[in-house]
Image (cartoon, rainbow, N blue to C red; front, side):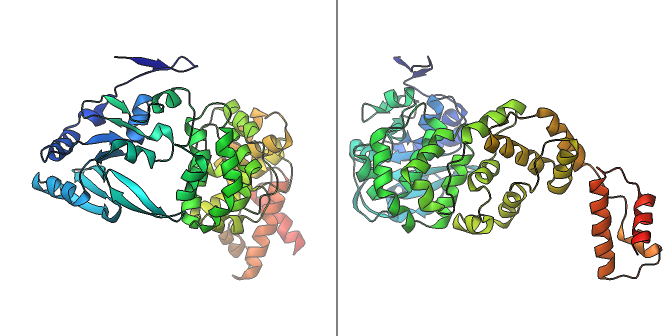
Length: 410
């Protein structure tokens, strides 16, 4: 069995293994398709990620029969079939809690930058040529033996080189979302500088992103921001104009690498909302969020991570941001501040933010009513004043002192 090594010494065999491959559900699906004379092969992400020893989330299968034949073969074996994309050659097979997306070999005969009209084929190379990146055009037999139809996919994957199949401009004209996918895939799978030809194509064709749905754009951006190290990809998005095409509010190139370093310093996992907050900065959060079709929960979380109106530089300010924004958001504001100001992260402030998040306002509305205050807006105003005094004291004023202060003010 031949082995390919990349420049980092990572070895990748030409066969894949894993529970997903040998599971009874997988064998049942592959056998059902083979029974009617088809040649089913695993394709795309499951092959790519298995070669990289990464977790497998989706099992995609390519097959050299049309979708109606695939559906009939699966149903004959007692397998539930969902016609998820039958017009484009895809059906989904479901056994227990495991699903398999099965797509007929196809080639594009007409594209408009978003959708493609396809025809079915039995030519595996034709099917490979319509895919986006070389590392996504890897197939594997039911026994795990990998087939590199293009002859360059394995070497590109070993080199962590995210490269379009054929001409970059052709692939992008077929689907403009591939511009964003290029940056996302480099963040997750690439190593070093991005391919110059691909970047030139993205720069010249970024205007095509305007025709995509906001949901598709938002999904890609969040996936990009969830990558362990998106800094190079984000920088190239800014320089090619692709970032401005989807988020015109952003006018400066954020130092995402500095944020990556700050995260590493305190040992926390990547957070797409933390990275997105740094990307958006102090621009209009609502407008940017709508441009990405973020959920209301994500919008609120993003707003909590906008820059504070004061520097987080000492114990009092750290406890304040922790109380105001909560532990996670307060910590993220600190990380973003350090990255934006190119200052070293003071890790002691993180524990102080946690301390602030655990503070509880000592006076409640019931305390004021028991003291004789009538229910109404005055109680709310009094509580706000007391809370601000309490925060200004660095959370040292107790209940009786605060009540006395309000009494004197009245």
